[in-house]
Amino acid sequence: MTAMRIILGGLGVRGRYWAEVLTRSPRCEIAAYADPNPAAIERMAEKYGARPSFSSVEEALAQVSDANGLVLANPPIGRQSQIEAAASRGIPMLIEKPLALSLEEAAELTQIAEGYQVPLMVGLNFRYLHSTRAMLKLLAEQTVGQPEFARFTYERWRDGHRPDLNKYPLTMDQPMLWEQSIHHFDLMRYVYASEPVLVQSQTWNPSWSMYQSDANVAALFTFANGMVVNYQGTWQSGWAEPHFEWRTDCSGGVILQKEQFGDLFYAAHKGALVPVELPPHETWITETQGLLEAFVDTVIDHKPIQCSGRDHVMSLAMVAACVISSRERRSVSVASILPQNFG
Image 1: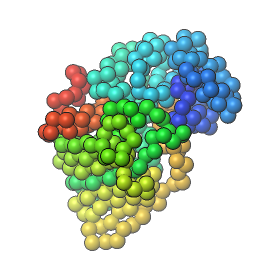
Image 2: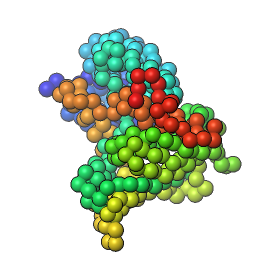
Image 3: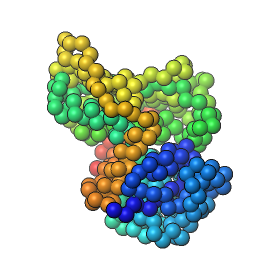
Image 4: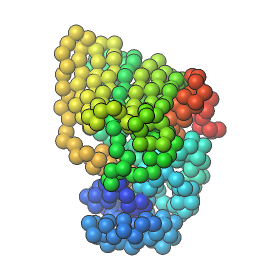
């Protein structure tokens, strides 16, 4: 089988992980680099080999005639011309989340790709964690019964000035929601196999926060199947020690994940916690490999697309509903804010 030839756009933090995953893949190869920063291109070429290099994604798409895939790992700003350039050439796209920084723009970008009938997949890599797959299996087999409510806690002191982290979240609106919580909200929809119907939320920024906008989120979600999820997330915890816990209470027991990349357990109603054995995991690589494999399966093997732009808009609607709920101090119906032709 001929390998997919991928243009890699955006060579920052996520771009470097993508270069590693693409280089390891037996079904892909990097056809070109695209980044406005010459130093980023130079660093990439030194580690992964020289490729045709361009200062813009649009330029790369215009000149690399044998490319048949685009991975966008750049910030979610100004992507319309990039998506139009790829879609008009029939180039399938795998784009880092969030697709855009507004629900309306994400819907418009999705419809551009749909208009050309070109696959647009969004990088919700947490769906491909071994822990996520194992949790799906526990729920499908009703190991501890039917899920009814859950608590999802993510507490972190994220140093936005670290050299290995993107800097744009420092000044963006609602950075925790758009950059981090989107992963968690998407996992809720994916694992509980239901769509959100009602959101009550409050966001705020602690006095010591280095972020210009709110870095803390508390939210209560009600899903169509009756699931109720209590969520707390922060990028500016008062303690630098991170804490993650995702607890799902079921009719016959509980499912508990204690670390965002693993440590999965279940327990019967009156039983002890039973650890779930998970395969080895290489942080930011293993789950990204799963995401890439799903993309290649869609493009080459014509399997149904996963994490489509349309699917992603539903997760972004949870983010947008949180913003509105916090600003207006009211519960928000998700259906009421979905763009036309979505939902």
